Length: 269
Image 1 (cartoon, rainbow, N blue to C red):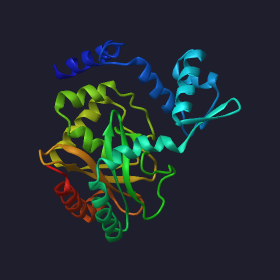
Image 2 (image 1 turned 135 degrees about the vertical axis):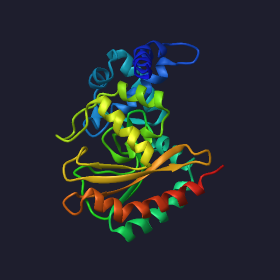
Image 3 (image 1 turned 60 degrees about the vertical axis):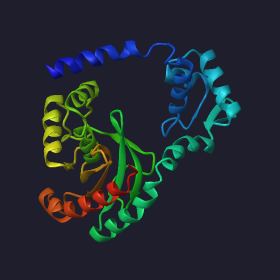
Image 4 (image 1 turned 135 degrees about the horizontal axis):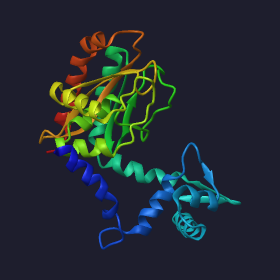
């Protein structure tokens, strides 16, 4: 019953995002244009931006010129590029969460103790967003830093945060996801993923091995606020060739949980 209700919620989502007193479509399209820039498109022409966002050329022009006037993009001939001012938008979030500055020394101590890379992330839709990373050595082909995004369904931090959601919300989100296969080991069956998330919720931690990238294994636990809500997650990353999942759990989980408890205690009431 809950799964059928979740499917109906997904089907109705498109009807909710219509111009209204509570939804400003032009503002939403401006944000879409900002998000259209990235590693695959560091610079774009009007036509390219319009095509990527699904706007007319005239619509993309109005938005890009507005962003240029505000200082968020710059123009070089026919090409538009983001300016460093865009970083203000992301760092406004981090500056509103000052306890992360207090958490960083704890993460650094954990990295030194277990000699493994550690990270912290929050959930945003079907992705996780990194808010802190302390690498000890490079084990991923992806360059990660603050603001980097990864799919939630095949990452340990993502699964911890998805598992913390109420059952109906968890099912709704999973059914709305396009579960892409990142490696041959990635779980892409929604029912299997939901069963896995239920297990993660019961045990309080998630171990994911080679579902995001071959040769990568990670272990994550939640960070909870004073009301017990999981507001973020921290993880430890390693290589399955160096240790088994059981060994990683035995060696790293107690220290990871201890740091998570310390960070949770820092959260404002």
